[in-house]
Image 1: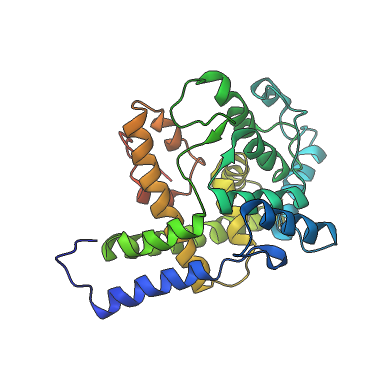
Image 2: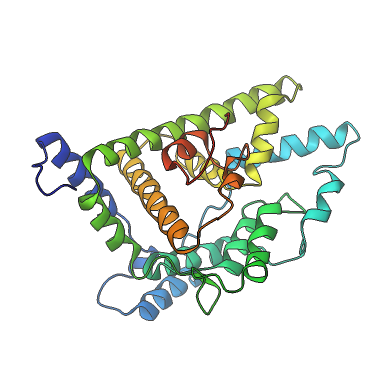
Length: 298
């Protein structure tokens, strides 16, 4: 934020709301400050082991859509997903993360900012249980091999762009981002939710009419790409919540900063890949303004 500009009351309220949203993020099982990272992760693991709530990887509504798409094409004599896709997945039998594993992975990522690529791939496979092949998971798995000397990969094949508790990073970002950027991110986050809910409703309509069309294809493509993560995230909550919107907005701001830093330390990344239809939700793609990215259609 420009230190010469005194934020208006509305700006200050936006900042305070964003910071308050970060403060609502808690680890499952009551593991919080006062313990080191390992102690907190042990507490989360113990909580899950005692039957505590694990992560909801695929909301029921999304699972129903996935199953209906597969059933429709299989009833028409077309195996789903198409067998031709198998050649693009180098390790179709790789680990699929369980809901329990996803909860622990999320806690670890939150506390350390560290996200090992093999665990990300396992998470992606776990979030698409009906897919025998998973193209984006395979891409993540082969990244280490393809760019072994990348400056953004740590010794344990983790993305090394962040360090420490992500809540602290987001809390700071809420105060350092300009009110204009924070407001734009807020609107983009709301637009991402609208995009996800609208796409889901249109797919359900096409399937109910037994006439899969444009929306069904966009859904299926998105479910195999990062946009699918936004679909699942939005479908986990039935009603919009201001805190969730604020966290999504901060996440978009952080992504934009990290992409800019990635281009700085490793110029010439394949940003055109992110322009692929379905790779990102259109509102998020537009907000992120990826380096050297040409305009793309929705």
